[in-house]
Length: 324
Length: 186
Length: 99
Image (cartoon, rainbow over the protein chains, first blue to last red):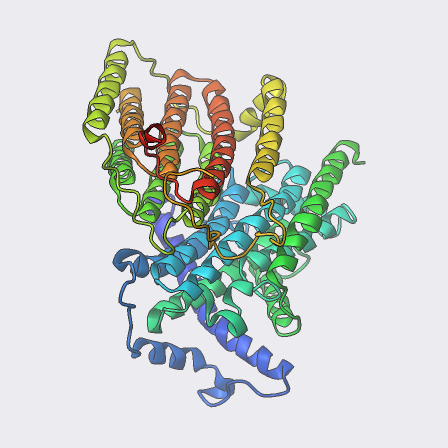
């Protein structure tokens, strides 16, 4: 029965979406706990043991809030933007190999598909900002689009380093290559580590996490592009932002840290461990570093990251020819 | 059978979206409907076994060109915040006649030519890459020069030359206030 | 449906693009219509590549996409320059002749 592509596709999608959405909900708990501890306080503790049911309480609160639609907001686009963002964030999970056998779809252009969808995420948020008919939201939206398209370039170039080293655009093949030849972050020395750090930094920028969160800078723009969104719509946006962070952590661990390959634990455990480590690092950075200003952000991208990425790609190309 | 249904759905969506592209009054809606059309083309590319091209279409067009168009719309608003100046009410009858004539000419050519009908071979990205670097390498290099020229040219053309303007890289899209009458030149 | 379906779809998109090109008053609207026409051409190229065999059509479609992107970049830069010079990008054919 599982050979029928329709049934296996439906089962994979159902499992993936359920697991991801549950993970996203509990990530909000995790982030609040980590934030609390880093600021010498406890974080949520009241609802359930260790505050573990806090996401349920948040969901119930969001569901019963009044949904206010601004007067001159574009009626269709205002409602259409949140589910589109969520769909793009979840769609990337289809090509990530979680175990050697559980892979939604081993596309022969897996890397490009993942990059295309995550690069498109700036777009529905821009639609949300424009449809809100609010100038602060529009400023946030334009900043986010400028940041998103600028940082997409070093991200694609950094993601091309594992492609060049392993000779295939398919994520399943990249992980198989790392299973045999060692993780890219360790070997080839230097290039893999540089590309990993570049990819991680640009993924932070794409997901609007600190230090790159100028579009949703709370001290400047209220809530940025999603200012006019209330209740459940805003929850969907927040969830899709967390979803984007999780998926790019999974993508980074697939491309550079070897995905499911590792010594003696089962593959799924390795995948979960690697994704969690990266996600913890993202949260850790969020509560430690300061925010970059718009012009510093753009200067960083165009003057430093793009030449660095091009150099890495060149070195990776040379390595594939002279490798022992 | 499934492919035929998929093609039919894609074709209907694309034609509807293209119709809305050329008839929408609000310019931002025009650009967004163009996004739908380009996404539909990406799906059509997948149906035509061109997977690499579909991914490139999404990355370049919906991630790049659409953003450019949106910035273009935002930066050229005559009146702040009003993007409803795109009404296509200028030479409508000529437009109809010309579009109908072009379609008739193309359809006539299509129906008269004997068309090939090869079997699907599946998507082969590797062969595409090899073709780029062996058979069409000259065009590939020329293309890189063209893109360099285009980027440099755009920067040089659109750069502000007034004193006291800091770089406009990530600021909001508010155009300079100039008191000029419409239609007159500097 | 075969090749004819894709070719007719591309022809339809192209003629809608021509309609937009002739009818639109705003310069960015005209660029959007040109984009639509270029897209129809790419669809045509890839459809022929699939039904004729070989991948020359896909290679040319990729070149066409890159060239179109370059054209849009320069075109929008010119539109912005036009806006700075006149304050408005409405393309009124007769206005220049009236002066």
